[in-house]
Image 1 (spheres, one colour):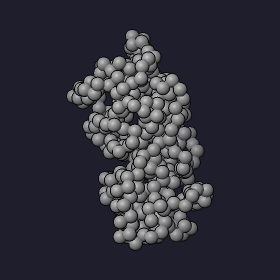
Image 2 (tube, helix red, strand yellow):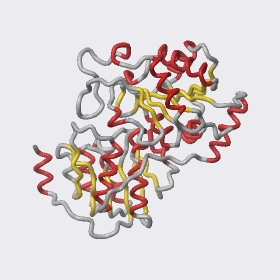
Image 3 (tube, helix red, strand yellow):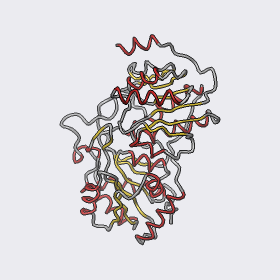
Length: 370
């Protein structure tokens, strides 16, 4: 392959000095960027004196803007990958060259990204090498596309290779005190004085992919939430962002229990604060669910045509609802045959509610916002 040939022309090198200025590249999408916070924290621990920048797209950059391990955030624009057009490629290349970086860490598998990082002239270039696509890096971390390995664990292997020792951390995001105060005011205004459950029925769409089959069906989700409301007496809060208006509206209509709906009303910091103070957060395999988990919420991820061994929250306090089935190798893939069908391939509302109640019995009571 041409990638392997190019890789042979670019020799690998060892880390011979402590990096001073580092850029981490993971441009899309929210879930991927949040999963990369484990690597970001491990990197800060390994190099406490370094200046660390993170390069992310406009879609996802705000999710980690206030992360304590960061010194700077570089917005690469609206595109999922800022190297797919000549104009975007050159713009991104200028961003890399302007930073004075001595270490670039690429957590993408794109050959175009590999080429951009190579052309940046940054001396040490560490990154993922999947099927030879990391030819532009001079510290390559092999990735087997068929291996069922968590994305965060793969990112951490890159940091371990740079640090010369095993590095471990969980995905993490700080909860902003000002956002907590705002959520307290909102809850008081809605007369919520006890525990509450947060549910996000949307997701499955971002600049890099649209996969609505990731969404748990609204009728089944309503059944699941009604069961939880009866058993826990917790209030229900439905949230959504741009494009989730219909999903939240349909779910609200199907619920028997009363629910508060906050659609397009919360920013990332407020969602993190709301989730962290909830009895639990329930969402699909989406970036918002990863964000909630990283903020410390007791998180339930409803997974369909994607592999929890690769894409579940990389945190200690989460539950995955998933009915084991065969999936295509190499990442997100739908079940074989006629496509994913929740009624046939997914978990039932009754079983999901049972698992959530068992999960909640094994954790400390939530609700520190109130």
